[in-house]
Image 1 (cartoon, one colour):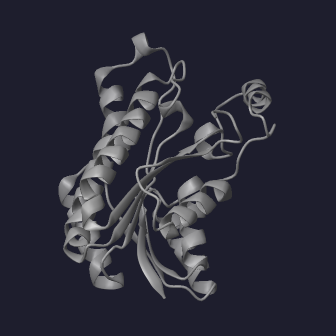
Image 2 (cartoon, one colour; image 1 turned 90 degrees about the vertical axis):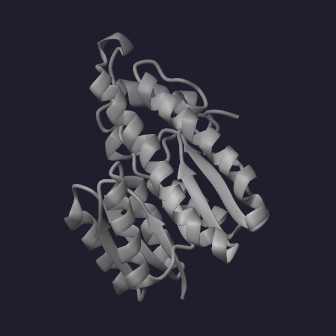
Length: 242
């Protein structure tokens, strides 16, 4: 059995698909959740039914003490994290001038500060072992800003910068750090878009369809095993950005 892998935001959407893909591939899988424990536990159960090993761990990833506790619990139950998938994220849609400081800070805390805390904690044992893999989930809107999603775009652009900086810094320790930038994916985060907006986005995509969480999960599994790939931004976007 391989791993363990820790997937943040694994209670639904892309995170759930990533956890299932790693579980099916034989990784001991740690599923992080914040508010939706039952979904993470259900997904862990599905991995167990496939013959895998999985466990759900709760934490507010913007809280340093809770991140530390989550990693300690994961290490006791499943072993040292060998692959970290930073997937947890939130969005806020609206005019930039209508956004409050608290709303801006919330997006930055969940999408970026949580990634800082998880990467920093995971890297300490990885550096000692001179081995490890980190996969950060960004977005096409981190490569190309989206109207009415300024904070989300800014946070996801920062994820790309963080990924490339860490790849440079940790490469000599044998640690690979890569990034996935999904396009328009069928997830609850996009459920608030109108049918007209979704149709327009499909028309802008050369493959003329939206992506699935499983498309992103396949990319994450590839990056976990790509031993000579680091510092890259892998677009899973149907050609939306080339």
